[in-house]
Image 1 (cartoon, rainbow, N blue to C red):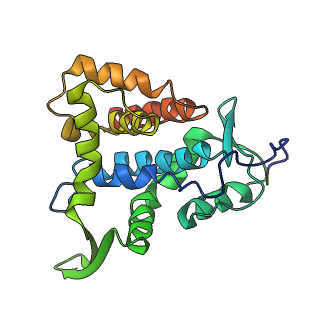
Image 2 (image 1 turned 90 degrees about the vertical axis):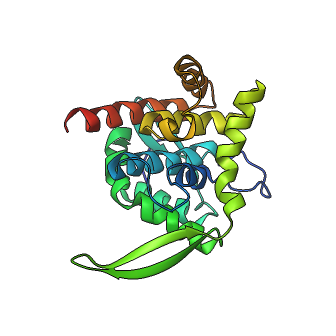
Length: 224
């Protein structure tokens, strides 16, 4: 674990549910045929940032001078978050946030999908496709749950109600990865930009994570 001085530990109530931000982003990044609506690399980066945001929300990690710091002393209660936390702890010194996003991105989609299978939100089916071999397809077990994040965001926007803090984070992730073109396709661009700025008013260090995500995704798009 990094030698940076640690805080006492997470400031969340023991019975507070885990903020599964990455699960909502996973739903939003797929259509009702279980197909991604954005580039795999971009959503991988987004989901990596979403899991880090979960750890930041619950105060297991922090960001200092663009370095990701472990501050929680005990493993997180969520399986996926614990796996990522253990990777962070294994490094002898703090690593820059952009590097962690790139390291975690390749396995992020499958990692979040496996967590959702364990929670009963997805079911996994393995199919054999010509020239590709076995492919695992993840489908929602409850379409109401699948549509809920989209409905929740759009209902708040259409009624003019302020987004909950965790939904402001979600919008920031959507804009950084391009998911908003699918989810908020009827929302004026000027309003989307205001919602993007609102994502940076959420609890620290999540705004720092989002800014790094925007930079990394923009670079990924630019080099294509």
